Image (tube, rainbow, N blue to C red; front, side, top):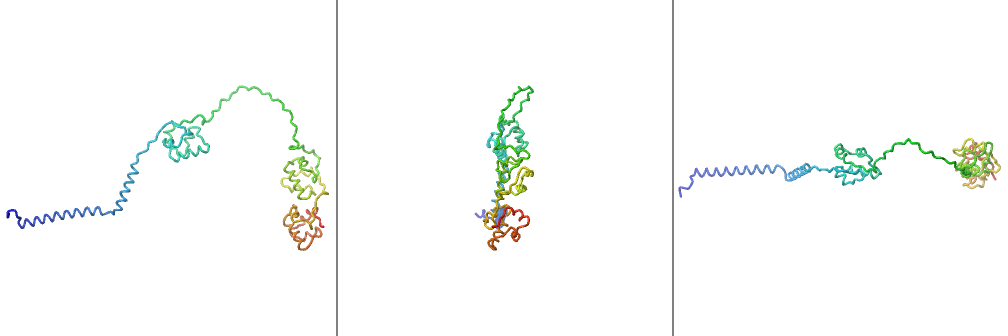
Length: 299
């Protein structure tokens, strides 16, 4: 048994060898742990996700589109996508057709917004536009003489004198304060509209005292004076001291402000004695007083 016992020097060598092996093992373990611990676990997770996402983006298989005959006026959205139309072009085609648009010829399809050379060169030979959507080709003009059509003379239709009254002969006049709209429409240049305007303004005034007052109606013909006569004896006057405020305001030469002045004077200072008293009121000029003179009375 003494033969197998190591000597002291052998034991030291064995201890040194074991220590060296342990040291090498520790160095290997520390190195591995150092490399794996450089990055936090969270960073590794984010990195792996990014790599997976990158691989997903670049690993998509290229989509293959189909090519077959189609009519752009009747094809549906699914078919357009199969042909390679992007979704935005499909929406454009549908909006165009919804508004009544039609593709009459190949050039119309080529002008679809978003059309590329690649898509056009692939699909152009397969576009089939139905005849009902195509433009009509004009027939060649025939130079053959057409048969002469005999036009028969139509019988004369009696004139509608209500809608189209016979106009007055030159030198004939109309009594302006007595004429109705039918009579006024016989004046050259006066139709239904202006006849009504003349009667309406006559009612508001109380009657015309001069043919020049017709020019106060907008658009009235300037030569109407020669077709009318004036009888001012039938002019209706306003009793200034007893008229209501509405009656005063309604007259074209008084209106709101002048009517209010008369009304305030009557209630604060008493009745007016004559037309000269209007000079004491605001808003009355000499021209206004002279225009009102035929239409006012003071009782």
